[in-house]
Image 1: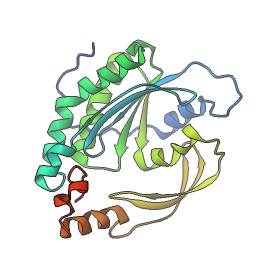
Image 2: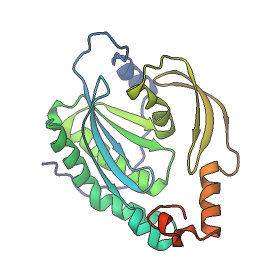
Image 3: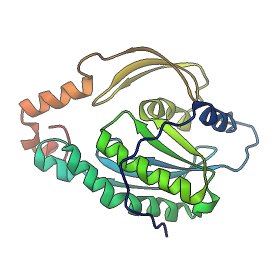
Image 4: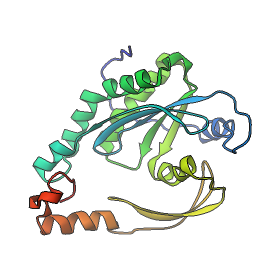
Length: 222
């Protein structure tokens, strides 16, 4: 059972060199022998509290998620302080559920990876504070995650995509075009300057009151 004190709003600026050295110690090429490494990932960048335990081959050993969609549907959008409170109420349970599902002891983790940007500051703070307490308690390395970069790398979990490759990311709050040259090596080629496509679709959905349509009543954004 994980027992941590109440989280506080802190911000951590990691050593990029240390992170890069740790990431390089992972061998992501298929057909190669691996050292046994297991990472706990924690995500709280917006309105979902999520955690997963993943091994060095990309297998998800255990995962858990708490969705806030039902709450935010009632307010017509995400209210940051409300999202923050829901993260606080659920993060310890979600992390514990992911670890339990994986049957991995916290002491056997190789590192803890957590989203630190971009996202809602209040939501990010909850995941970061919790993770740093866990890092201190377990004496494990910390891997800061840029969640848009993480989106770009997920293709390598299901397909044999070699570096470098071009990626176009389109989401609710961000849109960017980048050249992915390595696990922690991204060349930004362009990004949205004012409104991202996903954000635009949300605004149109609200103007059309799509939330009242039966097929859209359980979807966020409308």
